[in-house]
Amino acid sequence: MAPFDAAPSGRPAPLIDPFGRRLDYLRVSVTDRCDLRCRYCMAERQVFLPKAEVLSLEELDRLSSAFIGLGVRRLRLTGGEPLLRRGFMGLVESLSRHLRSGALDELLLTTNGTRLAEHAADLARLGVRRVNVSFDSLDPATFARITRGGDLARVLDGIEAAQAAGLEVKVNTVALKADNAGEIPAMIQWAHDRGLGFTLIETMPMGEVEADRTDQFLPLSQVRDELASFWTLTPLEDRTPGPARYVRVEETGGKLGFITPLTHNFCEACNRVRLTCTGALFMCLGQEDSADLRAPMRDHPGDDGPLISAIHEAIARKPKGHDFHIARDAAPAVSRVMAMTGG
Ligand code: SAM
Ligand code: SF4
Image 1: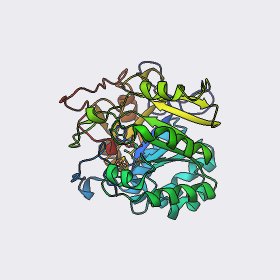
Image 2 (image 1 turned 30 degrees about the vertical axis):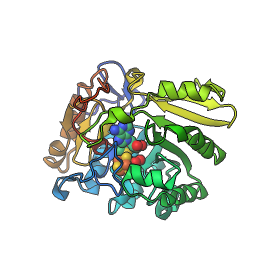
Image 3 (image 1 turned 120 degrees about the horizontal axis):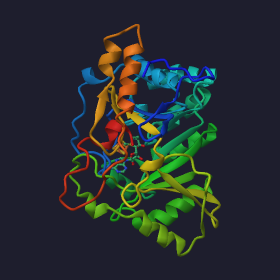
């Protein structure tokens, strides 16, 4: 395919994969480092990438902008912990030009919230409207155990600051059989009382992390049945393409999402690809195949043509779906941890 195929409207031809899925959503992991060590995500002594391997913020901007030029309308910055990366707000500021030009509909952030209080006002000023904040317990001791030492108060301060700045906040919580199963209804109630969205995620078998995920795996079908025994869950039809199924909890008035890669395969509506901080493009969260975008970018400093060709070639290899399953003693479905691709 020619690199700059233009649609009749003058807009770039959208990225369409071999299964006819339109790719208009890019997730960019800006760092693999994190200030927490969630047990299901990372090893206690996680080995991080040498700094020399990590793309500069200018390079992340160039790659992101190439995707926006190819029709990506939503860009999510994630990590590791994105707010930990030095100069991160400069990247947000630079990318916000695409919001002002109308090329991008949304610039989004997924964060653990520990540094959100410092940055919430600037994020809002730069045009970020929605942030996802991940945490898995409202009990400080449980939170500290899951994260191996995190301070819940900082996350809650971050959420408060984000709301005060006018950001829409959604809480992401991984359902963990041993650590938070009994707490899930209270967490949903807490979030909905504050006008926050709430999404539950099944643990996915990614990377060696010491813990045995089968001990913690909690099928969301089971959680949903339990919630439905005392709440009225009304399915919402207007769901955006993506892995979450949403319901309204009539008693709380809030929105509840379920991300169920293990109990319900969601690949048919997949609209996204994921870029790591080393410039590897993963076409599927649950597969090993990736395409190197760093070389075509670095080898041609003033010319995006080879980079755009490499993106098209990668999209042509996007697989139909993932093969996640959880089995005791089985190797993870993919060897990299989630922090490489940012969820
Ligand atoms: N540090 C940020 C955060 O925690 O939101 C952004 C990166 S984190 C990798 C993104 C999301 O992935 C979080 O909601 C986290 O709970 C989730 N996650 C990490 N490892 C996971 C796993 N093995 N299975 C399911 N979700 C996972
Ligand atoms: Fe860090 Fe997010 Fe992974 Fe937790 S889930 S260790 S906060 S990257």
